[in-house]
Image (cartoon, rainbow, N blue to C red; front, side, top):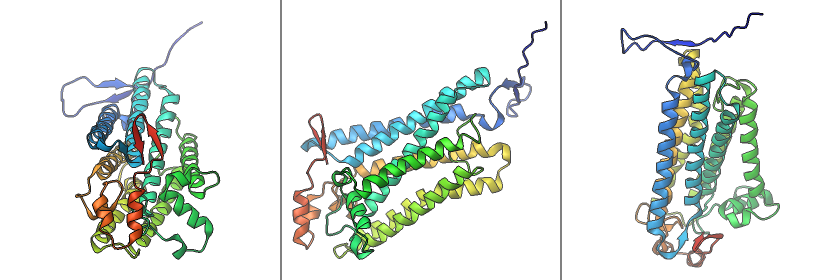
Length: 342
């Protein structure tokens, strides 16, 4: 019997180094440079999480930590873990042409969790989480549905959301499940490399439609927040900027996918989609990290928000209910060691 092994590899010629021998690798052309990119990605996201930890530690003089800081820090670590898994997969693929389907799938699911966390955080802030109760969205003025009122109340108050049967808690679970299903469904179309944000298949298109719907819901929430009786002109201007920035994040993946599919050749699309999604996610995480660690002097929002700890801002509001809300600002949801998470 004749035993043989046929090994097919890609030929990569570096045009910047004329005269050098071509490089042969199992890594396909559209994955060239992705190991370096994911390495930079994981380092930067870890540094953002470290920045959050150091900043919160310095500001933690009263033993309180806002939940939003923990959410963003956790999201950064999960995003970093996604890149770690993809680096493991790509290095294995480079050696044997097969890679690790487990780590590649895990990378996609970590991406899905990050999208879910950021989406929920933006929606919660859009309906008034961290703001005094008299500035929060009055859901009953939008719709008489008790479900909508309960959902808005749950998003504004995590301790309410975790109660059994609360629509906000159900929405949060559904958000994670839908993103996880989409991430796993996409692997039917390509199980060699993570294609979570790929527009070329049905689950990717569903993901983009979902992001558009969530973006519209985000805009509606912020617009309703701006119509609140006690929303000052300065706060309204800040919320306008916040709504535009948040909506851009929701639409970034769909618009990016459509644009790249129209202008880029097929053999470069996956690479460009992966790089662009990594860049805009890092930009979002760094912006949110700065947002949740800013003090009360940063903006009109932080002056009255529990994020900025602006007690003076709360007491300056004309309605007495804000004073009462300020007194409840330090109410903790749970504890981590000696620190109260509020």
